[in-house]
Image 1 (tube, rainbow, N blue to C red):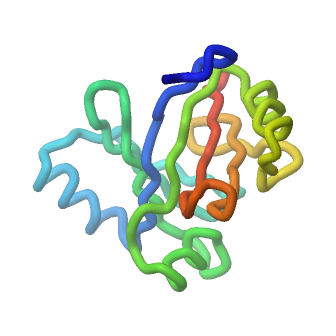
Image 2 (image 1 turned 90 degrees about the vertical axis):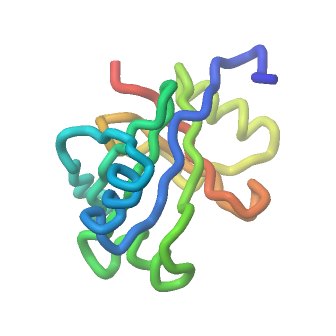
Amino acid sequence: MANSETSMRLDHIGLAVKSIDQARKFYEGGLGFGSEPHIEEVAGEKVRVLKVIVPPGVHIELLEPTAPDSPIARFLEKHGEGQHHLSFAVDDLAAATQRMKEKGYTPLWDQPHVGAGGCLVNFFHPRQAHGVLTELSQAPK
């Protein structure tokens, strides 16, 4: 059950891939899902992102590094392709982050970053989330 203090829902699953072009063949061709028409580059995170639409209302982000020092490139080197993070949509990222901090969880960043689609995002380390990098994401206003 969702916390009555906040509106939170599963938004997407982030998958680290070596090649969006190769990975999309499975999700679009194999599974038959559609995707956004354009691949977005998030320069600050050195990543390309393709949103694969999974009805009703969830998506998969295929994450491809654009530089060898990007977080996704480091993830691929250490873990190979696969699940990178779970993302939960929140109405108010600052309030949701503050509630998490009050409960003893520490976000990766002091201030949120702009992620794919212009969303404000912050993450919680897998050490605090039972092995899963966890993102909170607020849609742009």
